[in-house]
Image (cartoon, rainbow, N blue to C red; front, side):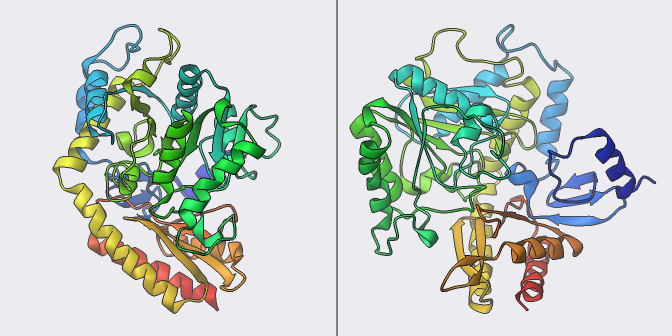
Amino acid sequence: MVSNNDLLRRRQEAIPQGPANMLPAFAAQARGATITDVEGREYIDFAGGIGVVNTGHCHPKVVRAVQEQAEKFLHTCFHVVMYEGYVELAERLNALAPGDFAKKSFFLNSGAEAVENAVKIARYETGRPAVIAFQNGFHGRSLLTMSLTSKVKPYKYRFGPFAPEVYRAPYAYCYRCPLGLTHPACGAACADYLEEFFVSHVAAERTAALVVEPIQGEGGFATPPPEYFPRLRSICDKYGIRLIVDEVQSGFGRTGTLFAIEHWGVAPDMITVAKSLAGGMPLSGVVGRAEIMDAPHVGGLGGTYGGSPTACAAALAVLDILLEDGLLHRAQELGRHVRKVFDGFQQEFEIVGDVRGLGPMLALELVQDRQTKTPAADKAKALVAHCRAQGLIILACGNFGNVIRTLMPLVITDQELDRGLSILKDGLHAVSG
């Protein structure tokens, strides 16, 4: 039997060090919310392939859809010979995305591609060059999306120079308010700061788009208050700026709704989607107002593999599972349960400075001291290692690496969930001493 160490040696010889690996193990099989490695050890999965398998590993309906499509054809390139699955998926997303207006969608391979193309469309349609992103945001690793991304290490360090006309504004990270505010309307004040930003950084008349995550993923699950996104929407409308909402990590049930932005009652001009859209198959897309999406000339958008037949088939199955099999309701149940447990952790452990998120997209921010809020990155790293040793895969994130996030598949059983939360609690005991 091949061992993890054998494969790790081969990995080190054949693959550069740049692609990081969070678990020193190799998967042999994955089902639902459990991954089994090549040595037969099982792990409860609270990472979900970094938010990719909301419908679970190898969901039977997704597997069946891929198999059935693979028997028909694997690739034609949509730009050469079209196929119905691409059209049907666009139709369904257009109908499901928030906003009482006509929409159109097209498909790509990765979240970074989706964000990059949304920016291209906004620049083309508005005729403006500038793009505003936000502190702590993460949008990808291509040149433009790396430029939009906030955190330097490991994502940007020594990879410059970066794309021009990208500007970074404060985000409503209320636990560490960038404006030093504590009053109840801090979300509106954080959004309204853009008016000053247009004076000191980039003119509104030169700004094509705001690119913003509804809940920041890699940035630590910062979750804005209710007034934040309505104010951003109002400011964008005032100046003719396109609001691009990056739902790559937060979409498809992760917050208990199909799109996280639904919690704020706001309709973006464009939404970028990926990750859990296709249940593990590589697929991303841009969904937006029809007149904006139609702006670029014929041939200005596309890609050889974008919207592959098998990925579109998988995505259609994912939508069926989410909308017809009660998985959104399950997500809401998970969110309530995990939030109750996390609130208990905050009461019990001084190291837990903040609990935040929506639905089952939740996070614990670990601090050395609640008064100073000094990040406890070493404690977070030790907690991840403790959980791994006990059979739980969990991820840290945040600019300081001190935030523990939950991205478990929504199909996780109550037994798996409780076992995972128990391991996490034991780990908090271990690192709090």
